[in-house]
Length: 272
Length: 223
Image (cartoon, rainbow over all chains, first blue to last red; front, side, top):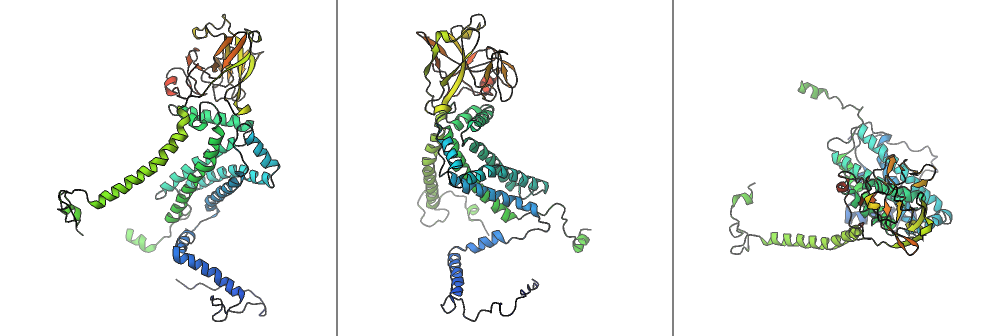
């Protein structure tokens, strides 16, 4: 590997420049200053963990990958989607501290309490509510990027399939979360959505009964939706996102379609 | 590298030169222990997964309780117009469990259908047969109209226009003294007003519809 040029030192006057460390400084033997000791402590903790787990190898494998020429801002849509998912997970966990899935009035009242009375409640609930829409938009943009750049082709078909399952789960999250405020809009939108499910022949009626926990909107419908929304689907999604990321790191990313492979004159000669 | 397993055709462990083989033994102890461990793991997983699954899908098989509820006196309901009645469809969830039915007295001139002959009062559910929005009775037009997707039904609850796939559901009624009572377990009807056990909205009951959308064990007629 050719030696890379060194970054020039910042143009500071000599008095402000940090002196080079003296031999033996900051190696944890207590002879350096407290700052050097602190630096050494951090490194030795990381070393302690790494010696016992070899996690740094995995971290290097995940983070320091070669990316193709032409990689651009469109390649950030997947990370953006993941960060919205993390935002939804964190805000959702904290909303669960105040939310009560009681159809006889407690659910609506707890949402009203979060929105009007809890410190930053309206903000956190707003992040969760608007983040849901942002996530759906980003998922579709990410899917479009993958499609138009041809990044779903061999050997990445399985990652496309996992992505489609994640898309379906995202929509299911939107559907189940829509009921939780338990206002008129939530109730009737869920009624209509469940009944659309039911128009599927043969299994539709039974799927409806599973979702509602009975033949009509009942006492356990809201808590079923709540459990599906906050436990079942997020767990599935986290696992599938892990598999999705693993395959991205394993297979690498694709170059944009407008980047052509380097013409090797030697190869061209042998083919002809 | 030669494959050990293809060199020996015998099924006996003794013939395979496996140390510690017994006379007539065909399954190695290693294979037996592997199978036992996997089986034990499968049994352990099934012992919590199957009850949990049954717990989650149990309501599908459980008949929901329904009740007779007084909705008014025999003089309250005319023969040619509907009176809205609010009743409890689902117990225990407050306002969310309430629903509305439109009720009128049985009218021999228009309720000529054989299935309606012994019904003292006609109680029409407001649940639209398209996707379940609440319809309302518009007196001037003599039509039930759904606000969501434009479903329109006539005086008997039969579809006139729009997306609904069958007439509006109905509730059984009875007269007790001078009181009219409504049963909260609905039944569905097809376009000829023939009765069926309750179906969800959007599920047709004409032709093969009753087989495509089968009756469910938690919602059978039980009055």
